[in-house]
Image 1 (cartoon, one colour):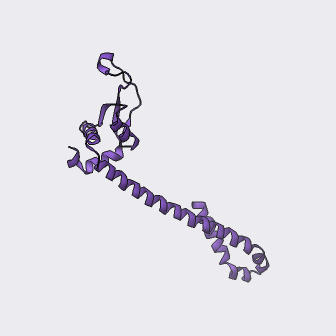
Image 2: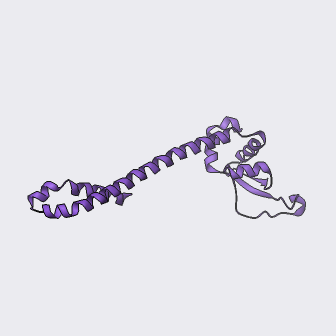
Image 3: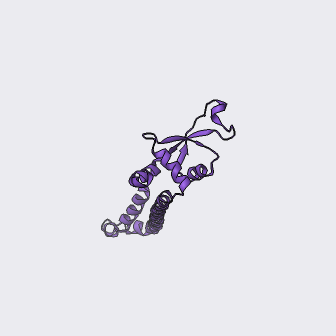
Length: 156
């Protein structure tokens, strides 16, 4: 981005130096290369406008996604809200063992409300229950935790 701005401003500066070229009798040189400078300046100008448009679109999309994410967390169904409450009530790490194949856990995981910690569950078969669905350690995502802390009364 920095190089594009420098290229554009340099081109504009060269185009405005025509009176200086007259003073030094370099008008023939200026006339020969000015069309190249105009093309390069126009190229950098168009790229800067496109970059600015992409930046604005990205900011608007990010703001919309954050609003949608906050609405999702604040409007969780009873089962999902219960899972999030249990995680929230285990500070400072906000973690709990949850069954991996639970549809509510899968939805919260896919919507980036909770995340699974890397690691293995080690336990006795009698305490695990179903060996095909062992409990895995999940924690609240930091972004979700900020929203929950801001709306603390709903998650108590």
